[in-house]
Image (cartoon, rainbow, N blue to C red; front, side, top):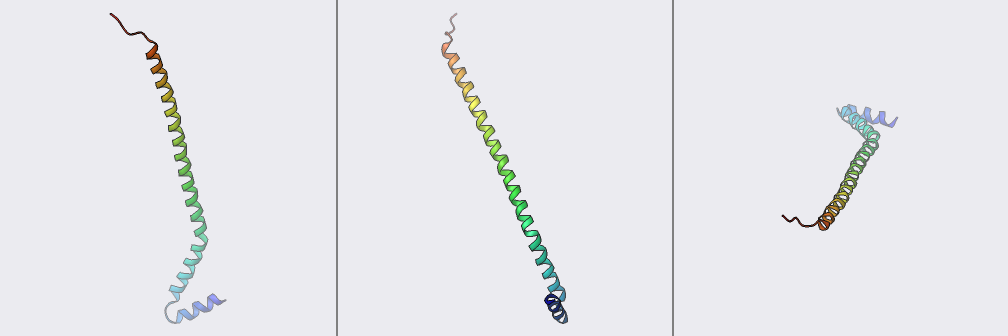
Length: 84
């Protein structure tokens, strides 16, 4: 009821469209604001999870390579030098 009175009063001076747009925009903003925030949070969480998985994979590969290098190095020590 109060909103109608404000719009009617503002309409006399030519500001009715402005006030109506302002109220509609504020209402949409209040409705869509939480949805947009939760969507952004979910998107950031998914990106962080993906990066964490990539880091875990890289560390696992580095450990594998380190073990292979140690095995190769140990094999070189046990071999006899080549003699013609």
